Image: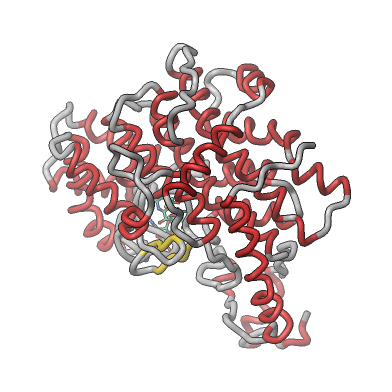
Length: 446
Ligand SMILES: CC(=O)SCCNC(=O)CCNC(=O)[C@H](O)C(C)(C)COP(=O)(O)OP(=O)(O)OC[C@H]1O[C@@H](n2cnc3c(N)ncnc32)[C@H](O)[C@@H]1OP(=O)(O)O
Ligand SMILES: O=C([O-])CC(=O)C(=O)O
């Protein structure tokens, strides 16, 4: 296998990883016994909610404020990164540099990543053949995950591991695989889209364009969809480490499975309706309301009734609630601002705004959810629909392309810092019942 070129991003990443390693070694060796959390029965049964037992420096989610990427809020991130000429949004490639290194790249460093992605973006023909062999009505997330898994034979990490690589070198081929994947995912996603929904008429990539611009081009959607793609991929990239897609990717990679195995698994988690698939569910819900109203916008009272009908039939209101957030998701706000600028009078946007007025009150009165406010998924589909991407079962694929940036940056760092195989301890229900009666687990009790 050819030795890959050392870009300034890769050199910077190497420098950062090497400088960071002693911090992890010191924490582990000298302070490994310092307690940072406790676990109760509710958390063991309830999805480990709020248990602080994962580490990542790529992003952090504050329940009130929302996400920060490498310490920057969403508006700060958009403002700091080099913008694509003639566009309101930054290069996704610069954002990849930023997530990996924690440093805002210069335009020259960004353009080097743009070149690097182009050089890596060739998808092997057998991946398309695999996709073509699947029934056309297969869910596009199944197709995306399958395509990623099929490509595993390309893994440089697996190849180097089989040759007998040293632990300190693991990050290097993990970075290579991750970058290959990020560069190829837009091509695969657009291929799936056009194969499934656009009569299988494919649009060849344009090597002159950046990742967002090229994605819009391959999808066959005119400007400003290129900016929508840039915004969407950046906003959906990362949400610290505990969400299902990030955690799954991290968990699988902790067995030293390569980026293809790990990310394919992460995508399967993203495809669940309580996680990434909620954006598809939101659109389906909104469309259902519009259909029942015969295309007319509902009054707030009518909307309130629709919401109660959903809750009373035992379903969740998609796009609302969150496992960590306790306020409106800033990713929702960011997309709302985009809509206010580009599609203020679009009826579906007005309906989504009306839901924002009514749903928090209804969910609060319903009294179950800890967070009655909207998450990212409540707003994202409207923008896609407006620009002609009406096939909403495809929306989670877009989420997946964006999510790759965060989770693959994470597993590259996981290998750089030598994180261990993840293996929490499980207990039996009988043990929980015994400890419940005893008022807690006695340390010697197993
Ligand atoms: C990108 C993302 O993944 S963002 C999330 C996307 N998912 C959705 O939008 C789906 C709708 N929302 C939900 O189902 C939830 O809010 C989740 C899955 C996001 C978070 O789940 P949790 O952390 O368990 O939420 P929480 O602690 O508030 O749940 C308590 C109760 O409120 C219910 N609840 C939470 N959100 C909602 C909602 N939007 N509509 C109705 N009920 C809800 C839960 O189902 C749970 O009910 P239960 O006690 O009968 O099991
Ligand atoms: O943080 C979570 O659990 C879910 C979420 O919003 C994401 O992964 O983007």
